[in-house]
Length: 370
Image 1: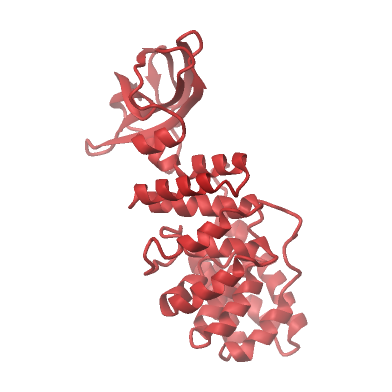
Image 2: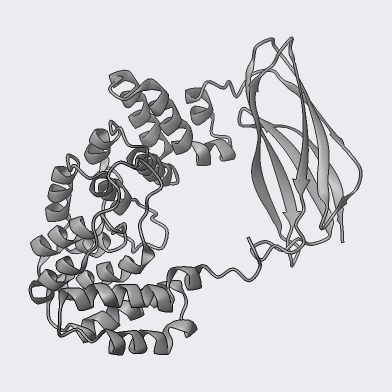
């Protein structure tokens, strides 16, 4: 990704604003598209991404005043056709429709039935996972009942909203007061979905739960496996995706569910290949020895030096395989990016460890050179 790339400018800009204005001008003759565009763009360049969503929603509320019963007919007339129903994954929609969800929240909290109707339409243009959460907090029983009906909706975008909107740790999303177990009956139904966009959301939802209650998740996955209602390959994928956080932390139960024995006798040695320098690579070879055909899930952990002397371990995937003739040899070149904006490398003492089936088996110290 280029250093000058700006996600907020790609998603919210003058062209996108003009497109949205055109939709509302076509739906409501009294809507002043030019004035709306001018108002939005007067502040948009100075705002961050989520602030832009809120600002556009505020401008819409000023351009078309009223509560949700008054504005809903105009809003629905302005919508373009739903997203392609023939796709099955990675069809999040156009971010320019995210402000419409904020507009529904601002004008519809006193009208939950109508708001849920509108959100079901909006989410077929752009996911309403953020907008549904204030309604979950105000009307949890009512929203969960509606979500039960949405589990059978023809649009996989609406079905996905059930899982994504109730996630315990939804990125950028408002916190919700649901108990971890409350959405599980809905996930029991959604895990059978034939659309990867939905089953990925179910797996992400369960991965959120693993942060607080791993056993609850392992038990649910086991019950789904025993029920054998989902395609076996898809359920294996869901299980692996769900347990990715627990795998990184070396959780024994997750390892066993995925078919890896955390107590297997496996000898590991590491050989560093040359010096490690910022801007270059950390090159190393790993040698594993154990029982023939032993399944292994191999990760490597780099303990990075941080400013102020703190240590920050980062877990990276290396290999999923089986020992052949009791052996496996692996090589890796880990890029040590010197210009990354999210994680600045600091010269000094570091450590590399090899984790196999959730257990750290070997480690070596090294100096990261500037």
